[in-house]
Every structure is written in C-alpha cells, then in structure tokens.
Image 1 (cartoon, rainbow, N blue to C red):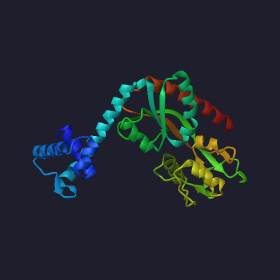
Image 2: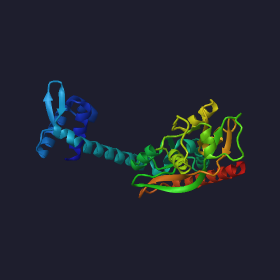
Image 3: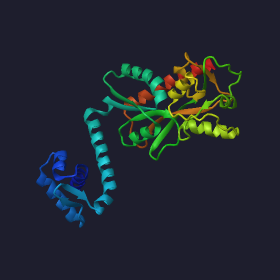
Image 4: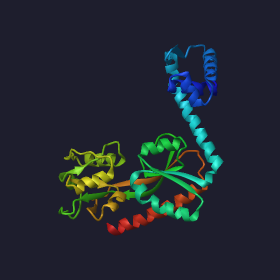
Length: 299
C-alpha cells in the first residue's frame, strides 16, 4: 500500500464514511473514492462494504487495521520530528518525570536552566514509568527522570543516585529506636501494588523476612499513602522526595535496615540529545546531590 492509501484507509475507518474521511483529509469526496478504489485494486481485495449510511470495513480491512494504526503513529512521529527541526531542536526541550522527583527535583533544575538558556522553551509532564517510556520511544519526550525499574527495549537508563526509602508515622505514634519492616507491618503498613517499583521492593523485603502483610490497603500514589497515614490509616514507606514534603506533618524516619531505590535518567537509545538536555543533566545531578546530603544529615 502506498502512503496515500494508508492515510485514506485510516480516515475511512475512523470517520465511517467518504464524506467524513474527506473532511479529515481536507480533500474532495471523489478523491477519497478514487484512492480507495486504487488501494483495493492494488491489494486485490475489497476493503469496505458500501451501504447508504456509510462504509463498513470488511474482515480483510480489520486484519489490516492494527498495522495501519501503527503506520499512522509513526507518521505522527515523523511530523513531530519535523516540527522540532523547524523550530530548532536546541530551542525546545520536552521533559518527563515521575511524580515525586518531578515535584521536588525538576523545579530547581529548570529554574537554573532558564537562567543559562533564557530563550529555551521547556515542556514538563509528570506520569508513570511506563507512560514516560512510551513517550520517549515515540519521540514526544527528549528525556525523563524517574525511579529505575526494568525498561522496555530501546530505552536507556542512566543511574544518577540511590534514594533511601523513608518510614512515615503519625505524629503522635511512639516510634522505636530502630524502625524495622517488621514493626511497621505490625502497625498497619500501607502497601503499594506489586507492579510499582517500590511495591516490588517491599514485597520482596516482606517475603525475605517471612512477613505477611497485615493491612488491606494497596495504594499506587505515594502522596496518597502519606495522606492516609495523616488520617490514621496506618504507617507507610515512601520515597525520600515525598517524605520531604510531609516532614512537617508526619514523623519521617529512616528504615532499619535501609531500603533503597535508584533515581535514573531515561532516554531513547540511539537518539541524539539536544545540547540543553546535557546541561539539564548536570543541573539535575547537582539538585540530587544537594538533597542526598540533606537526607544524610536528617538520618
């Protein structure tokens, strides 16, 4: 199939009629009809059943649809890259971050970057690890900051620092000298789903100590865990970035023994990074180093 065949096929399936496809493509209806006829002639199969209310894809068309969708997504990537080139790749930086480091690490680094490159336009989105990887692979992000976990093919993870997990206790709860996983579990430890990187760590640590979770709550968002502890829902373990935000409302204590996650910088493999991305990397490392020193002082 030629590129124009793919565009018309996609527009017809999405729109359901020749008139809707013509509007989507900003062409005449006869042009859509001719292109469809040529595509069917080239393939040697009928792609749509015609009826007064529109078109219905044939079984052959439905078999083609996943590949057509993938091709259109790739065309969107090409279009996005073209816009980057038109506007200047070093004048625009698209960043992603998981929620916790996005709230505490990115702001300081971005302010410093703007001082260095005042003409630079920056976009920042926060999302979960899998979504960030998808956006990087689709070239909709240049780089992302996240907690390290197994990444899909095509994603490079650069380890930046270890992040010691912190225990969260209600302000009026009497804490032992050493806050252990066993003690937290006995006091209603709120867990995360096992597909979450911290959830995986906690599940493995509980299993290693032959501990059975006592709480029935599993929460994916770290800040919600903190809010539940404030509300009297038990105890929690969160990343140090989230813990820092709640230090004035909860007891934030180190775990014994320590339980660490890695903070990593993600990018698509074999994709050249704009100059601004290299500068931001240096600034992010500075921000993380400062916070690491602060955590060591508080420990």
